[in-house]
Image (cartoon, rainbow, N blue to C red; front, side, top):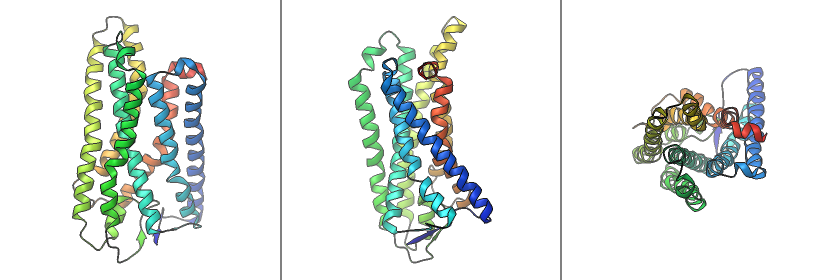
Amino acid sequence: EFILLGFPGTWHSQVSLVVVFALTYSLTVIGNACIIALVWMNSNLQTPMYFFLCNLSFLEIWYTTGVVPKAIGVMLGTSQTISFRVCMLQLFFLLSLGSTECFLLSVMAYDRYLAICYPLRYSFLMNSGLSAGLVLSSWLGGFLAISLLAFLTSRLTFCGPDVINHFLCDIDSCLALSCSDTWPVELATFLVSIIVVVASCVVTLVSYIYIISSILRIQSVHGRKKAFSTCSAHLSVVTIWYGSTMFLYVKPSAQNSLDLNKLVNTFNTVVTPLLNPFIYTLRNKEVRQAM
């Protein structure tokens, strides 16, 4: 078994963090579930863009569920231990869901590119078959990309100490505890992050270069504003997600400050899933009207 340290501080600070985590988790689940329910019940929202958004909301619910309940138990001192198998399982699912989110965000960027650059042909180009195929590929690609990395991590030898300076099983924390050669795992982590994070980020970036150039060619101010409003929410989510994800994983070595990683992981796994439904609700007129 490993022992998760969680956050340092007094009992009162731990209780305060528990309240914040519990409140954030509740709002995240409710907010993302509401997005799914609104799209499912409103025929006007049953378009490829909102189909992708529903998948993102579904992913966010499970992504934060894989972290917050255990983190609350760690901070309260009622569930600080975690078995090796459960630790590896948590690591696999969190990294797989994170990879899937990268692919989904790039798919959503491509969808906005087609909608803005080819508005008259959009419904023909982005049909139900293509949108379903892109979502399925995102989920399969996200889980398959992490399979080798999870396998290599599970083959590491741990001789002690068995204390993880985190509130979850993070790849860097596991590598810090291993007494075997971690270079193959670090190399695999770097290569997978290049393939998943950087490649999907490039697709998103190229899509937005074309989107912005198309928006700037629109003559009327109202037309430019309307076109930009359809992708501003997605652009906000992309900026937040890729910024923190690249800091955590796109690096040649795992020798980063574990305390700093803990802070960024908190933002990635607790705050970002909460922000997504609210950003899309505030910046999408159609969602606000459906509510």
